[in-house]
Image 1 (cartoon, rainbow, N blue to C red):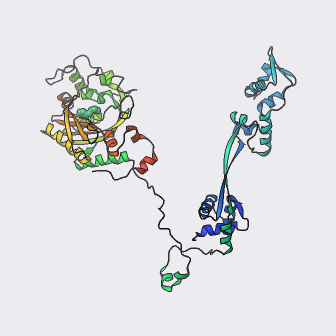
Image 2 (tube, rainbow, N blue to C red; image 1 turned 90 degrees about the vertical axis):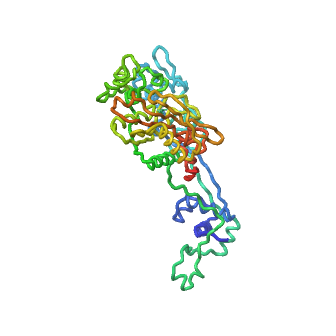
Image 3 (cartoon, rainbow, N blue to C red; image 1 turned 45 degrees about the vertical axis):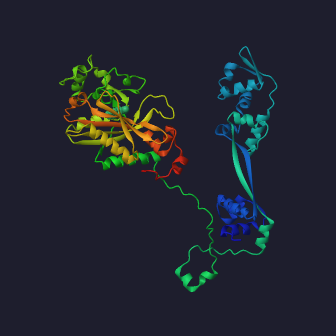
Length: 481
Ligand code: PHE
């Protein structure tokens, strides 16, 4: 039988006592108690020792309990502060009156008549008080009558202590009597030890090659973040730059600049989280106003009515990342523009396995001379192909800011066609107020769904759970197919 040095030391230490508490052994072996328990469990596997675990419960005072240790429970202190009777009003001036009066009445120690408190005579200590007195004396008590009441009152707290007793078995004793080699084991041989042949007589550490090693969980990125980074990589590879922007946006950038009418249902409470803040409108906002009211300098007739600057200033949690696209274009109205972002958006949705009130979108824009719908479809196809979705199709859609509008769908085995977001070419009503003179291809894709499909999840919520086991067990490959 090959024992580790630690097991041998444990047996030798245990020898004279036969049986000992792990804490005692730890002290004698100059080791941590947990380590000793570990050695003991190994030795127990070989039948050399028995390990017995005892769980003990003890009760110790809480901070409040400690405050009464010296003078006793509040009701006792207050009871002793007056003779036979006392006007309630006077009694109430005692600092502990608030806690004590209720308990004195509950315990039947006092009676109250005409505003005067009188002792009933039945004021002997109950089991709780007796237990409390024992606690005061010893600092800790075992479970017993009255203790539960003290726990309920928050005066004492339960503490669990675990102890281990290790005892030598007859087999262990027999082995010990044969004598054990307590020399340090050698795990690595030196050149000299090999050349001199000394290795023959060294106590070499044995390895059990049939044992599985302990699993190692090195730090790694969250699976969802990995997929997001993969998407970012793809877009960088396709020549895009990354845009960024805040989660809070004014309605102006989230809606108005995108030619969404101010009475559009998507702006209403059921979809949008409105915030109390108001942000000022950017210079040149009048052109957006004019576009809404009558089509500005274009052939559009706009939405008509009066456009409210007040409404446009109100802040929202962005409902789509398209609010960043339009700001990027406003800042870069000259071609070429190729930009993307991945960002969280917020909508007031009923939450279920496939809908959340917050999710991520991958937004992209391409502006250049003469780009058209074929380029848009090409970009989307290319992106999805790189993500591993071979079959992509496009359905006509509607968005207030694009014309034409397209809804891309990918085919997923076992699920069929899955809708993944929206896209289109920005209308002139969107581009003209910002002096953009060339077509803008735009898309906003829901990517949490894509991630869910790629990770084989059935419930979107799993993506956002703090589930370390899931993060550990999800392989880091499984990326591109
Ligand atoms: N913003 C749209 C959405 O959130 C997607 C979209 C973006 C549509 C760009 C067209 C152009 O669903």
